[in-house]
Length: 126
Image (cartoon, rainbow, N blue to C red; front, top):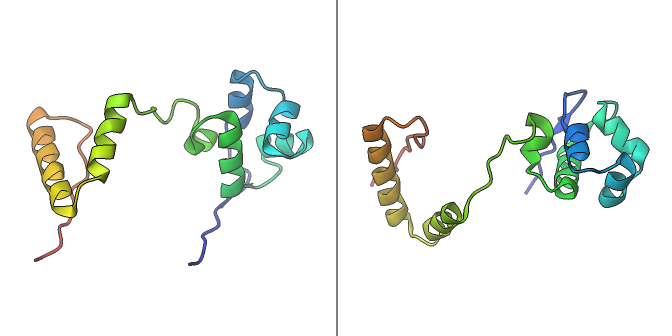
């Protein structure tokens, strides 16, 4: 399997903001990531390409979701315990049960006029 490499060059990022919110110096973040403070500064200022590998390392060290590195803090709402429970139940279902759950949720969302409707799914023909 070929791995896709994504490189984000000279793109606005939120590394410095998240780092400061966590009360970390660039040296402390560098130590957590296993690099130099100069490298962290280059990443923060767009002087170094921000690859997916860097995004993952930084997110782990900053204890945030990878999307928050490029989209900003608070972009990803953490799941609460109830949501985690539903996801785990869903993952344990077979395909037919999953399809039924999705149909029920779409019906409820349609009737309630909810803005967070799950995307329509193309079901395979039987």
